[in-house]
Image (cartoon, rainbow, N blue to C red; front, side, top):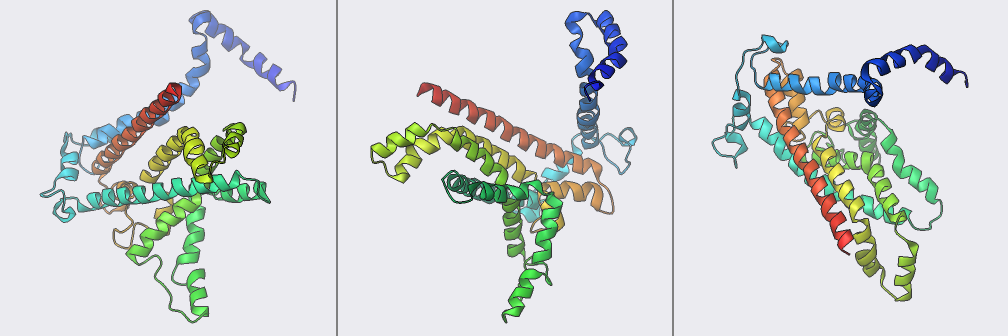
Length: 326
């Protein structure tokens, strides 16, 4: 194994020397980052450019340059409404229903995700029996594929699933867990929290362990109550981690797709249709593939994600400024 780096260097040494001769010593670094930049440009920036082309063109042709230019027509179709407070009055009411569902889902799921992650991190940071085991238990769902997670819960929740079998066994009536709109929306929130809470708990746990223990010892000597210690010591010092968790959870919630697609397919009706689900259905699942409309909706989503990213940067800078001022 120790001979492999030497063989690798001997193989590419002529290329390095040639690159140094052409680029010069000060620009030789471009030879190393060039392949990475090429891959990023090919699989990131080129699709973004093509997406803009689709958003500004119409028709059903797949090839971008075979599509007629329509300007902002696709955006006009998405935002055409007689009354923005009445979804039924919109030309693409399913788009607005998806936005409404996404906002509702994000607000509920993110609040519960942050609160539950914080509570779990506080418990796992204490000296409890089997602390390492419980940390692994809470983080384990993060290691699973979202599709696998959704399939497991679908097996439990479907009409002939484990939960209904248990209800029938005790003489109760089966519940339409995934075909009732209210229950379906509840379970999308529950499954997404179950699947991703361990990741955010780990971030908060790392922040808790970074807090100096002598501060808690001083609070204990001053006979500070647990609530006062939490409010005056833990939460202020944990605020940078909380901001990261809040913004990352919000971005993830807005992009929810995998679990919901497998669990409910966006149904019943449009009860669990979110913005990414709408983009997928419009561009690929419907009989007529409206690539331009799907691309326009994806750009609307991109703007929302950019605003969330800028919010994270602003909150992070404000938190750092406040810490320096103290």
